[in-house]
Length: 286
Ligand code: AMP
Image (tube, rainbow, N blue to C red; front, side, top):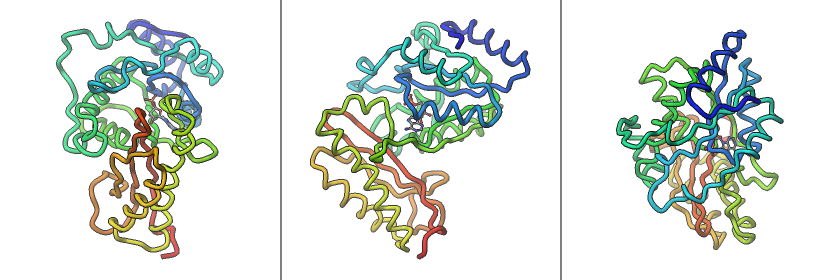
């Protein structure tokens, strides 16, 4: 794996890959790499692209009092994984170059940016979209791959690419989970023993909602109650939100008619975890 630390190096390396005829498949991350990130690299490769992975802990997407300072950073470890996964280029820009102090311009995520995660984390999606736009402008990939794990982020990135006319194909890959259902996340490392033991309740709550829909429930309030009922069984888990949404644009729904997103966020001690599933009611017996 080649390592680029400056924007000029990154542009040069991507130019070299493309000169060799490659389609570039970009996987942006904040590092602390895990099998979820690996699945995005694999997806890029399966789509015929040469995988390029970035590691950047983006200060713009963290709010005051969040975990920006404590977020796990270990570039050597990340490089080892990138090499093992066959990543062609690891781009780890310096904050001073990618986000010079005094930067003021940003991408406005619109109304969806204020809901769900955006309501709990004001400014979060402006920070995400701004950095994704910058990385896309530097690398100019043909393809960019995001995880369904951060569903609202994926929906907003797609909207940005469409509405701001970026020339990149956006792919969303399914969430990779631990055997007990917990979605892989760099933040899982923060969990205490008790918290880790109770964390799978997030996915169990989503599955309860999914079961309700697949057995014919069409009232989003009832589905939400099902999920909450399961979630509150775990005393270490404090829900931030539990939502039943349109699977395409994450708008609120009055009746469940088509593809539906079940999304939730919860705090386990100091750690905030999010998860979601997409449910297609047509596939149920109801
Ligand atoms: P992060 O490093 O957490 O900012 O995530 C970088 C990318 O990996 C994002 O597109 C995430 O949605 C994706 N991702 C994170 N966790 C998972 C997971 N468990 N399964 C699939 N993709 C994931």
